[in-house]
Amino acid sequence: MVEFKLVLSNPKTGKSYQKIIKDQDTKKFIGMRIADKIKGEMIDLPGYEFEISGGSDYAGFPMRYDLAGIGRKKIWAVSGIGIHNSEKGRRVRKTVCGNTIHPKIAQINLKVIKEGKGPLGEDKPKEEKKEETKK
Image (cartoon, rainbow, N blue to C red; front, side, top):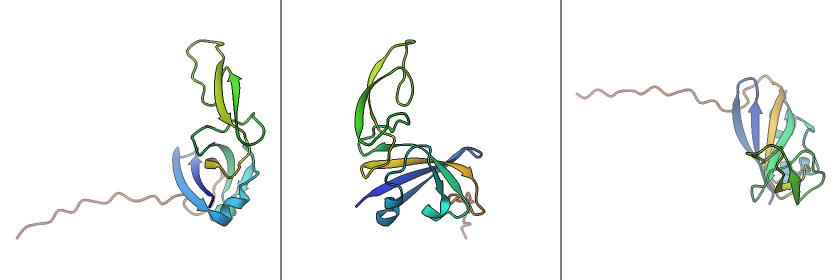
């Protein structure tokens, strides 16, 4: 059973929402790449349009946009996803995942490009504390 956690981020509001999809819905995502566009109808959010901005596999290795294919690879990198250098120009050996979505991907990050009519997430209003009076 394949399961993806979708992290839907809205750059206008700065908020992120999480949605879990399973089984039949996941087949639509397999084979897609970072920077591909997705219609909101694929994940039951009509009117929205999303762009795949990244993700990570089941072990937490980040997907990298410039690494073609699936699976993990060790690369020499100066900057980019997962690199935090303290010295300028220092290269680091880093294990990253390719830019194509496959069944062992655990999380997919989506960025809102076009907003729909309905709310993106379930924003819960703050509940007012009711004080009970004792008789």
